[in-house]
Length: 403
Image (cartoon, rainbow, N blue to C red; front, side):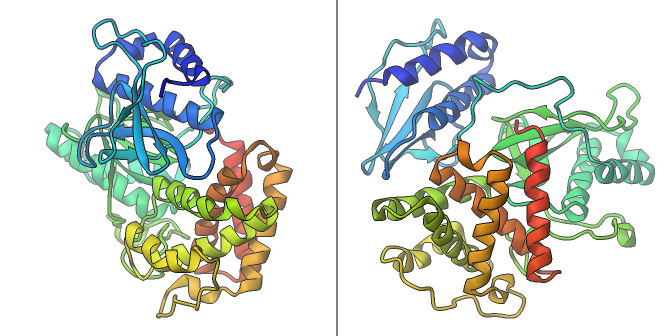
């Protein structure tokens, strides 16, 4: 199968804009390949059973620096986009069947039409800036020490940020490295945010003192390092701090962007043939996402949760409350609350102008992000207040730069 004309145009357009990436080191080439996959997923929506993405030869190997992939009728296809010698785009390359290799789900991102106004990068939040200052004051010997000691301080800051600054679904604080094989950063922390990876340089490389509210840098394609939520400041954590997890008091259960994207895609494979309205599809999607998050909170892995959910999802059967257990936040919900949550999501996303621009699968994906966020709030508040907090998060995210 030749690369479609619409995708070839994406390759050519992004290559023209980012020749520096195409001609750069392997990590920059991987970044460009991922951008092409994200743009293709955005511009070329697929029927149930197919989707564009990135690929790796195995789950433990780095992503491809030259290829994008497509799940297609139970097979995995790939296209080599660039000439390895000249680094220029190949013209309508033929697909290669790579079934058995590793598919990497991506978010649909419009890189070609994004306009970033001046100052649109995210400044380091005040709460995290205070963490940097406090831990720097307490551990100046690390800040002025060897590279490994500086890495230790950067990781401590990332752990404290994860502890003190709970994030909505689709986001989390952590550490970073340029690649899985390279050492962690000695000056920066990172944040997964709506399918992108952002980093902040915390310290001046010369003076070793903290930078004041540095702007974020988009480092998507580099390596995110998850961290535990650790309070290195003892009793000094900011008031209102908590854990952005689905574990209800258990160990931190992190549901990643790619897992939510995969849930939404697999739900739509079953939901799309039913021909229901977008609103009904979103409502049912919230119900089964509620089930998915509940299974994760038991805790289960993403693969195990989807396997347990499948017998309910395929016939669109009622889930028989599998979420019992002390501390599981999902147990507190009932059907009417799930229905109301979906209706409020649609109402707010429509008011923000996002719902109308996205297809049903993208709205299912984002609703799942915010349902997880709602559950985080619901652990401490009643249903109505948790809904209000979810809507506030949606509005705040819409005002932030979606890099």
